[in-house]
Image (cartoon, rainbow, N blue to C red; front, top):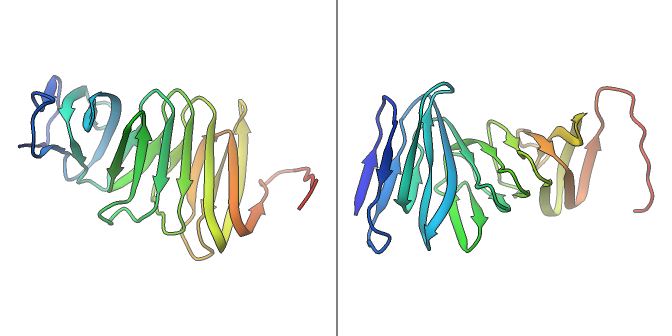
Amino acid sequence: GNIFIFNGGTITNDISGGSTSATGTIEVQGPASGEVFWSYTGQPAVNFLTGTLKVGTGGPVGTFTNIKTITPRSTQDTLQGTNVNNTWTLTGAETDAIQGSISWGSLTQNFTRMNKLIGGTLNDTFSIGSAGELSGLIDGGSGTNEIEGPAGTGIVIWTYGETIGGYFSGSIKPTDTATAIPFSNISNITPQSTEDTFQGPDEVAIWTINDN
């Protein structure tokens, strides 16, 4: 196997894991500090990934191909999904071995240590578990994007923010004691608990209740 450890500087070319018939670990480890932007762009073969890696908001974009695993090491890592329909789960904390997963096509890829999640250009569904944590933001990207709340009987608190161009922002607290997770560019929300609470925006709002 191969492990590519990136400790600083910039990537302007490609990190290649070699053949898609290779076995063993093929991994890229990101920098241990600073803003780091990861993006998936495709799946050349089952269990192999292609994508991009950028350090800093103005840094050049490098690419990686035929990689099995990415390992973020900073506290400011962002993950962007592919430009197809993506299904995301957020089930743990940023320090957990598995914080969540992203699925597209036949691939499901776990992730950890992510501070921000960004959807692709098509439809993204973000499913939040009661133990899910994210210190940054969920950005749905473009397309039709949905957030699903935790199922069960626990208290879940939703807060609405502003609406721009058919998308709305807000936040979700997966439990009554959890830290709120902000979101933006979302088309729909799906409450699934028996104890969901909604708080409106800080402006004049009209509430319509049709059924229970």
